[in-house]
Amino acid sequence: MKTMKLMAAALGLAAALFAGTAFAAQTNVAVAANFTEAAKEIAAAFKAKTGHEAILSFGASGQFYTQITQDAPFQIMLSADDERPKKLVEDGLAVADSRFTYAIGKLVLWSKTDGFVKGEETLKGGNFAKISIANPTAAPYGAAPIEAMKALKVYDALQPKIVQGNSIAQAFQFVDTGNAELGFVALSQVINVTAGSRWTVPQDLYTLIRQDAVLLKKGADNEAAKAFMTFLKGPEARAVIEKFGYAFGASS
Image 1: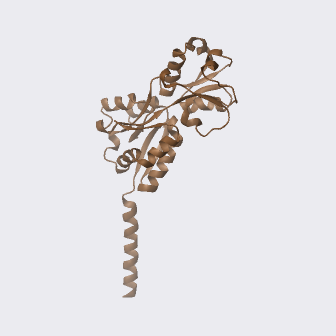
Image 2: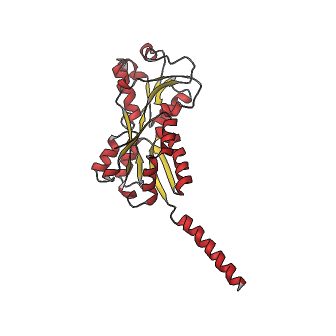
Image 3: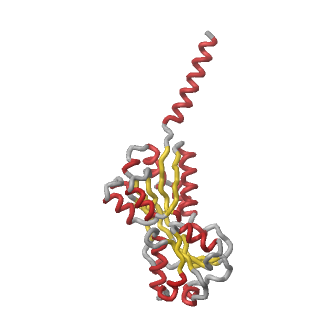
């Protein structure tokens, strides 16, 4: 009798443990490169709160859009712009009422050299050999620098000095490794960098960088995907988003 009770207790414990994990699921999330560190922190908080796991992939929004149209196994896209999520809805690949702005990004001109970047006069002076930007066709953070340089009437002079990264992460690496003296990066990438010099580019020099999230049709029935989209609008995610220098979006 005692043995049977012990077995029943063990089975009950196993059932309880199974019940606690049975509803835990995974979702595959395509994340714009500029949002890398913030997304990692949000995913960790999401897992701690819900038990679900967000599997993150990082890259350029344009490349992710192409991959999604070619049946890549993503269930959520956190884009660096609002156009590609909108287009995914129009293409019938995303859930129409799921799209919202999760963050508004800021552009920074950054150098690892102290005192090198002193504002727009640094661009107008042109006393450098290379300036890095992200690929403007694949990343909004690459299109924004061109808008800013054109607004300042320095683009034609600086165009021969531009080196392009596939994503904003690679544009950052060019400066970080010394392959370019300075470059246009996302504020989130240098928010915790104390060395060097930077200039936060005035918002009136480029189109507002609205970063939209969208639930893809592949994730429409995935509990983890739906839960992550909800979590991204909540206070825990908001705290992380603002910590990394973004304005909080969470609007449709």
